[in-house]
Image 1 (cartoon, rainbow, N blue to C red):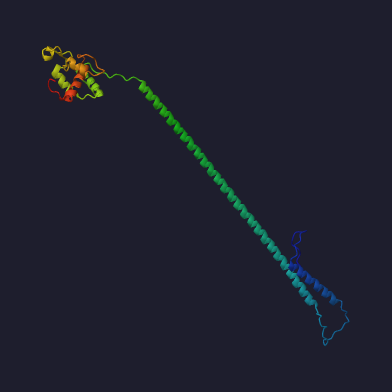
Image 2 (image 1 turned 120 degrees about the vertical axis):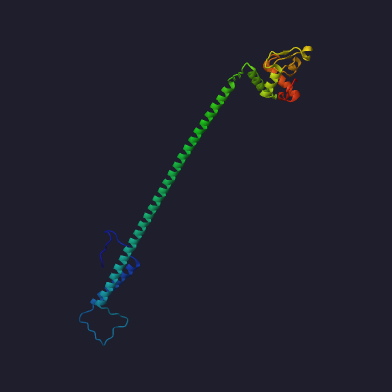
Length: 267
């Protein structure tokens, strides 16, 4: 019988096969003892048949049985060791798989946390950028508002005009444009030259108006009643004032002829 290869102090649990084999060995041993107890001078003849119900055993048969039982026990022990080894290997493989799965899970969790952290950082950066843009826009709007207020508060410099016929006509045209009175530079200039030759102090003392006590005065030779009726607010109340005279005459011509441009003779 092979020696026990297990660690000292450890025994394997006997299987049903082990128990049967041990029982067989015990039976055979008992039979061998019984046979050896037969007296040596006992004689037997071939003519005599063995008693019914009894079985004769030889030492060779007992040896063969012992050898078979020993082989069975050895084979059973090897199989048990193989099963234990396979079980241990399976347990080790299962532990390895579990460890690998756990490592993969931990790696996946770490990756997810990293991605979440990166996403959070990007979100915070985007929020900070948006806040900066909003703050810059607010400051720009406030600056524009302050500039607009300063511009509104700043008095507009009065436009200057030359104190001559060209300046008077241009000044009159700006007032006419503001008041919606039609007329052009050419229409005003042409009628002024015909009526007064560009002299703001010109006065007609011989025509019917003069005879009626209301002589024609100024650049466009306007009588007092007409000047007063068509005077434009914001201009001087004097027929001799060149700008007031032009604007009042142009206002009268627009009412009667549609525009000073349509006047080509005494009006």
